Length: 82
Image (cartoon, rainbow, N blue to C red; front, side, top):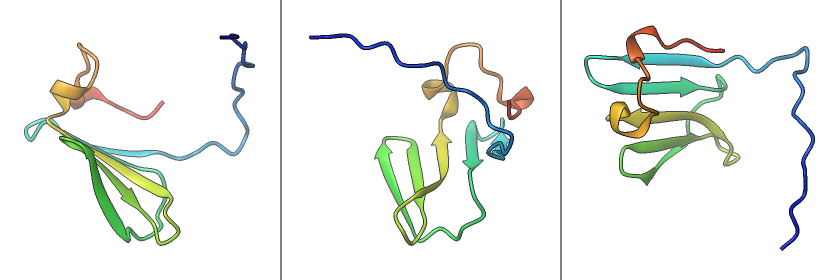
């Protein structure tokens, strides 16, 4: 097996606008990547749901029981987009 070093990603001026919605009481996180209407949703793992547009592109992700899926120490009450 050959390991290849990939270049470090760079930020572009037109940054992706993420819209995170959190509900700490429900232990849920919803991140919207685009305003495109959702045509289909698929639970890819228990508690992880991807929303797709009509062209099959991911437009959002929902994480239920987020405290079980996210890194330890993640606080949904203070989560914000980077």
